[in-house]
Image 1 (cartoon, rainbow, N blue to C red):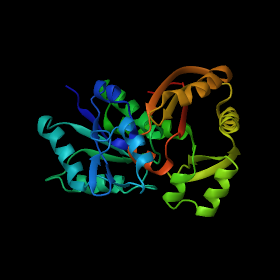
Image 2 (image 1 turned 60 degrees about the vertical axis):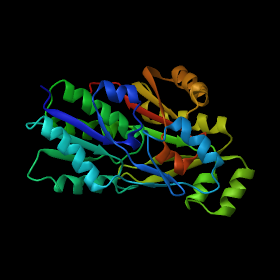
Image 3 (image 1 turned 180 degrees about the vertical axis):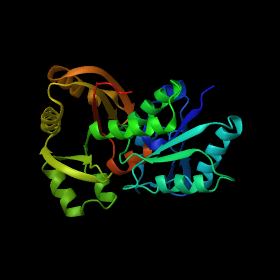
Length: 288
Protein backbone atom coordinates (compact mmCIF):
# COMPACT_ATOMS: atom_id res chain seq x y z
CA UNK A 1 0.00 0.00 0.00
CA UNK A 2 1.28 3.46 -0.90
CA UNK A 3 2.12 5.51 2.16
CA UNK A 4 2.90 8.84 0.51
CA UNK A 5 0.39 10.83 -1.54
CA UNK A 6 0.97 13.94 -3.62
CA UNK A 7 -1.38 16.94 -3.66
CA UNK A 8 -0.98 20.04 -5.83
CA UNK A 9 -3.08 22.80 -7.38
CA UNK A 10 -4.23 23.42 -10.94
CA UNK A 11 -1.54 25.98 -11.78
CA UNK A 12 1.00 23.15 -12.05
CA UNK A 13 -0.41 22.63 -15.57
CA UNK A 14 0.16 18.88 -15.49
CA UNK A 15 -1.46 17.07 -18.44
CA UNK A 16 -4.58 15.31 -17.13
CA UNK A 17 -3.59 11.87 -18.36
CA UNK A 18 -0.26 12.13 -16.55
CA UNK A 19 -1.86 13.34 -13.32
CA UNK A 20 -4.37 10.48 -13.49
CA UNK A 21 -1.65 7.92 -14.18
CA UNK A 22 0.35 9.05 -11.15
CA UNK A 23 -2.69 9.53 -8.85
CA UNK A 24 -1.91 13.18 -8.19
CA UNK A 25 -4.67 14.99 -6.30
CA UNK A 26 -5.26 18.43 -7.86
CA UNK A 27 -7.08 21.20 -5.97
CA UNK A 28 -8.30 23.72 -8.57
CA UNK A 29 -8.08 27.49 -8.43
CA UNK A 30 -11.03 29.55 -9.69
CA UNK A 31 -11.34 31.79 -12.75
CA UNK A 32 -14.15 34.32 -12.94
CA UNK A 33 -15.55 35.97 -16.06
CA UNK A 34 -17.78 38.64 -14.56
CA UNK A 35 -19.98 36.96 -11.98
CA UNK A 36 -19.52 33.45 -13.35
CA UNK A 37 -16.94 31.25 -11.62
CA UNK A 38 -15.19 28.27 -13.19
CA UNK A 39 -12.86 25.71 -11.65
CA UNK A 40 -9.51 25.92 -13.42
CA UNK A 41 -8.81 22.78 -15.44
CA UNK A 42 -12.18 21.26 -14.54
CA UNK A 43 -14.92 23.56 -15.80
CA UNK A 44 -12.51 25.86 -17.66
CA UNK A 45 -9.98 24.02 -19.79
CA UNK A 46 -7.25 25.80 -21.74
CA UNK A 47 -9.04 25.00 -25.00
CA UNK A 48 -12.15 26.79 -23.79
CA UNK A 49 -10.39 29.56 -21.90
CA UNK A 50 -8.32 31.33 -24.54
CA UNK A 51 -11.20 31.98 -26.99
CA UNK A 52 -13.21 33.30 -24.02
CA UNK A 53 -10.29 35.49 -22.97
CA UNK A 54 -9.98 37.04 -26.43
CA UNK A 55 -13.75 37.72 -26.57
CA UNK A 56 -13.95 39.18 -23.07
CA UNK A 57 -13.82 42.99 -22.80
CA UNK A 58 -12.68 42.73 -19.18
CA UNK A 59 -9.81 40.69 -17.81
CA UNK A 60 -11.06 37.70 -15.79
CA UNK A 61 -10.08 37.41 -12.15
CA UNK A 62 -8.56 34.43 -10.38
CA UNK A 63 -8.70 33.19 -6.80
CA UNK A 64 -6.90 30.54 -4.81
CA UNK A 65 -8.60 27.55 -3.18
CA UNK A 66 -9.88 28.13 0.34
CA UNK A 67 -8.16 26.50 3.33
CA UNK A 68 -11.29 24.36 3.73
CA UNK A 69 -10.79 22.94 0.24
CA UNK A 70 -7.26 21.90 1.11
CA UNK A 71 -8.39 20.45 4.43
CA UNK A 72 -11.01 18.41 2.56
CA UNK A 73 -8.39 17.10 0.11
CA UNK A 74 -6.12 16.02 2.97
CA UNK A 75 -8.96 14.50 5.00
CA UNK A 76 -10.19 12.49 2.02
CA UNK A 77 -6.79 10.84 1.69
CA UNK A 78 -6.27 10.33 5.43
CA UNK A 79 -9.70 8.81 5.93
CA UNK A 80 -8.98 6.22 3.25
CA UNK A 81 -5.34 5.69 4.31
CA UNK A 82 -4.93 6.57 8.01
CA UNK A 83 -1.18 5.88 7.97
CA UNK A 84 -0.56 8.01 4.88
CA UNK A 85 1.96 10.80 4.50
CA UNK A 86 1.03 13.72 2.23
CA UNK A 87 3.34 16.07 0.32
CA UNK A 88 1.39 19.11 -0.88
CA UNK A 89 3.28 21.13 -3.52
CA UNK A 90 2.07 24.54 -4.67
CA UNK A 91 2.42 27.66 -6.79
CA UNK A 92 5.06 30.10 -5.57
CA UNK A 93 4.06 32.11 -2.51
CA UNK A 94 5.70 35.03 -4.31
CA UNK A 95 2.84 35.23 -6.82
CA UNK A 96 -0.16 33.69 -5.04
CA UNK A 97 -1.68 32.98 -1.65
CA UNK A 98 -2.30 29.34 -2.62
CA UNK A 99 0.62 28.01 -0.59
CA UNK A 100 -0.52 29.89 2.52
CA UNK A 101 -4.07 28.61 2.02
CA UNK A 102 -2.71 25.06 1.99
CA UNK A 103 -0.74 25.73 5.18
CA UNK A 104 -3.90 26.98 6.90
CA UNK A 105 -5.84 24.00 5.56
CA UNK A 106 -3.31 21.66 7.16
CA UNK A 107 -3.70 23.49 10.49
CA UNK A 108 -7.47 22.89 10.35
CA UNK A 109 -7.11 19.12 10.53
CA UNK A 110 -8.58 17.61 13.69
CA UNK A 111 -5.25 16.34 14.97
CA UNK A 112 -1.59 16.33 14.03
CA UNK A 113 -1.17 14.69 10.67
CA UNK A 114 1.89 14.00 8.50
CA UNK A 115 1.17 16.68 5.85
CA UNK A 116 4.16 18.56 4.43
CA UNK A 117 3.25 21.72 2.49
CA UNK A 118 5.96 22.74 0.03
CA UNK A 119 6.43 26.16 -1.60
CA UNK A 120 7.65 25.39 -5.11
CA UNK A 121 8.95 28.94 -5.71
CA UNK A 122 7.82 28.47 -9.31
CA UNK A 123 4.77 28.43 -11.60
CA UNK A 124 3.13 26.31 -14.29
CA UNK A 125 5.21 23.26 -15.26
CA UNK A 126 8.17 24.96 -13.61
CA UNK A 127 6.84 23.14 -10.57
CA UNK A 128 4.49 20.70 -12.30
CA UNK A 129 7.68 18.82 -13.12
CA UNK A 130 8.50 18.69 -9.43
CA UNK A 131 5.01 17.36 -8.66
CA UNK A 132 5.39 14.59 -11.24
CA UNK A 133 8.84 13.75 -9.89
CA UNK A 134 7.42 13.58 -6.35
CA UNK A 135 4.57 11.33 -7.48
CA UNK A 136 6.98 8.93 -9.13
CA UNK A 137 9.06 8.79 -5.97
CA UNK A 138 5.92 8.19 -3.92
CA UNK A 139 4.91 5.34 -6.23
CA UNK A 140 8.35 3.83 -5.64
CA UNK A 141 7.69 3.84 -1.89
CA UNK A 142 9.84 6.83 -0.91
CA UNK A 143 9.12 8.68 2.33
CA UNK A 144 7.93 12.31 2.43
CA UNK A 145 11.20 13.65 3.87
CA UNK A 146 13.22 12.01 1.11
CA UNK A 147 10.86 13.38 -1.54
CA UNK A 148 11.15 16.94 -0.22
CA UNK A 149 14.94 16.73 -0.15
CA UNK A 150 14.90 15.59 -3.77
CA UNK A 151 12.58 18.47 -4.73
CA UNK A 152 15.02 20.96 -3.24
CA UNK A 153 17.85 19.55 -5.33
CA UNK A 154 15.81 19.35 -8.53
CA UNK A 155 14.36 22.84 -8.08
CA UNK A 156 17.82 24.37 -8.05
CA UNK A 157 18.57 22.86 -11.46
CA UNK A 158 15.54 24.13 -13.37
CA UNK A 159 15.71 26.75 -16.09
CA UNK A 160 12.52 28.39 -17.31
CA UNK A 161 11.40 31.18 -19.59
CA UNK A 162 8.03 32.56 -20.64
CA UNK A 163 7.86 34.25 -24.05
CA UNK A 164 4.86 36.59 -24.06
CA UNK A 165 3.32 37.15 -27.49
CA UNK A 166 1.14 40.17 -26.70
CA UNK A 167 1.54 42.99 -24.18
CA UNK A 168 -2.24 43.43 -23.85
CA UNK A 169 -2.69 41.17 -20.84
CA UNK A 170 0.36 42.37 -18.94
CA UNK A 171 -1.08 45.86 -19.38
CA UNK A 172 -4.61 44.86 -18.35
CA UNK A 173 -3.19 43.16 -15.27
CA UNK A 174 -1.29 46.30 -14.29
CA UNK A 175 2.21 44.88 -14.81
CA UNK A 176 3.05 47.48 -17.47
CA UNK A 177 1.55 50.88 -18.30
CA UNK A 178 -0.66 51.71 -21.28
CA UNK A 179 2.01 53.83 -22.94
CA UNK A 180 4.65 51.11 -22.61
CA UNK A 181 2.20 48.55 -23.99
CA UNK A 182 1.31 50.76 -26.95
CA UNK A 183 4.93 51.48 -27.85
CA UNK A 184 5.92 47.85 -27.32
CA UNK A 185 3.11 46.65 -29.57
CA UNK A 186 4.10 49.14 -32.27
CA UNK A 187 7.71 47.93 -32.13
CA UNK A 188 6.67 44.24 -32.01
CA UNK A 189 8.34 43.79 -28.63
CA UNK A 190 8.19 40.29 -27.11
CA UNK A 191 9.02 40.19 -23.38
CA UNK A 192 10.90 37.20 -21.95
CA UNK A 193 10.04 36.50 -18.33
CA UNK A 194 11.45 34.11 -15.75
CA UNK A 195 11.12 33.28 -12.05
CA UNK A 196 13.96 33.78 -9.59
CA UNK A 197 15.01 31.45 -6.77
CA UNK A 198 12.66 33.29 -4.39
CA UNK A 199 9.70 32.54 -6.64
CA UNK A 200 9.26 36.08 -7.99
CA UNK A 201 8.46 36.73 -11.67
CA UNK A 202 10.87 39.15 -13.33
CA UNK A 203 11.58 40.41 -16.87
CA UNK A 204 14.74 38.91 -18.33
CA UNK A 205 14.87 41.02 -21.46
CA UNK A 206 12.92 42.03 -24.57
CA UNK A 207 13.33 41.10 -28.21
CA UNK A 208 11.85 42.54 -31.39
CA UNK A 209 9.86 39.80 -33.05
CA UNK A 210 8.95 36.26 -32.13
CA UNK A 211 11.82 34.54 -33.93
CA UNK A 212 14.48 36.74 -32.34
CA UNK A 213 12.93 36.13 -28.93
CA UNK A 214 13.03 32.35 -29.40
CA UNK A 215 16.64 32.56 -30.56
CA UNK A 216 17.49 34.57 -27.47
CA UNK A 217 15.91 31.98 -25.19
CA UNK A 218 17.96 29.24 -26.85
CA UNK A 219 21.13 31.34 -26.43
CA UNK A 220 20.42 31.84 -22.72
CA UNK A 221 19.79 28.13 -22.26
CA UNK A 222 23.09 27.37 -23.96
CA UNK A 223 24.83 29.50 -21.33
CA UNK A 224 23.14 27.45 -18.58
CA UNK A 225 23.03 23.84 -19.79
CA UNK A 226 25.35 23.57 -22.79
CA UNK A 227 26.86 20.10 -23.04
CA UNK A 228 24.31 18.50 -20.71
CA UNK A 229 21.60 16.06 -21.63
CA UNK A 230 18.28 17.73 -20.81
CA UNK A 231 14.59 17.14 -20.27
CA UNK A 232 12.44 19.71 -22.08
CA UNK A 233 8.84 20.69 -21.40
CA UNK A 234 7.14 23.20 -23.68
CA UNK A 235 4.00 24.99 -22.57
CA UNK A 236 1.54 26.55 -25.01
CA UNK A 237 -1.85 28.26 -24.87
CA UNK A 238 -3.93 25.46 -26.42
CA UNK A 239 -2.11 25.69 -29.77
CA UNK A 240 0.64 23.11 -30.15
CA UNK A 241 1.77 24.57 -33.50
CA UNK A 242 3.23 27.60 -31.71
CA UNK A 243 6.00 25.52 -30.14
CA UNK A 244 6.90 23.24 -33.04
CA UNK A 245 9.68 25.45 -34.41
CA UNK A 246 11.12 25.91 -30.93
CA UNK A 247 11.13 22.14 -30.48
CA UNK A 248 13.20 21.81 -33.65
CA UNK A 249 15.61 24.53 -32.48
CA UNK A 250 16.16 22.85 -29.12
CA UNK A 251 16.68 19.41 -30.63
CA UNK A 252 19.25 20.80 -33.05
CA UNK A 253 21.26 22.62 -30.36
CA UNK A 254 21.00 20.32 -27.32
CA UNK A 255 21.17 16.67 -26.33
CA UNK A 256 17.44 16.33 -25.60
CA UNK A 257 16.41 13.28 -23.59
CA UNK A 258 12.69 13.85 -24.10
CA UNK A 259 10.10 16.52 -24.84
CA UNK A 260 6.73 16.90 -23.13
CA UNK A 261 4.03 19.35 -24.18
CA UNK A 262 1.58 20.91 -21.77
CA UNK A 263 -1.10 23.58 -21.94
CA UNK A 264 -0.71 26.76 -19.91
CA UNK A 265 -3.95 26.85 -17.92
CA UNK A 266 -6.44 29.61 -17.34
CA UNK A 267 -4.93 31.07 -14.16
CA UNK A 268 -1.45 31.64 -15.60
CA UNK A 269 -2.99 32.46 -18.99
CA UNK A 270 -5.04 35.29 -17.51
CA UNK A 271 -1.84 37.20 -16.81
CA UNK A 272 0.23 36.37 -19.92
CA UNK A 273 -2.43 35.98 -22.60
CA UNK A 274 -2.79 33.80 -25.70
CA UNK A 275 0.24 32.93 -27.79
CA UNK A 276 2.56 32.68 -24.78
CA UNK A 277 5.21 29.97 -24.92
CA UNK A 278 6.88 28.51 -21.84
CA UNK A 279 10.18 26.59 -21.84
CA UNK A 280 11.14 24.42 -18.87
CA UNK A 281 14.47 22.60 -18.82
CA UNK A 282 16.22 20.26 -16.35
CA UNK A 283 19.44 18.27 -16.69
CA UNK A 284 18.69 14.61 -17.33
CA UNK A 285 20.79 13.22 -14.53
CA UNK A 286 20.13 11.00 -11.54
CA UNK A 287 16.78 12.28 -10.27
CA UNK A 288 16.20 9.93 -7.40
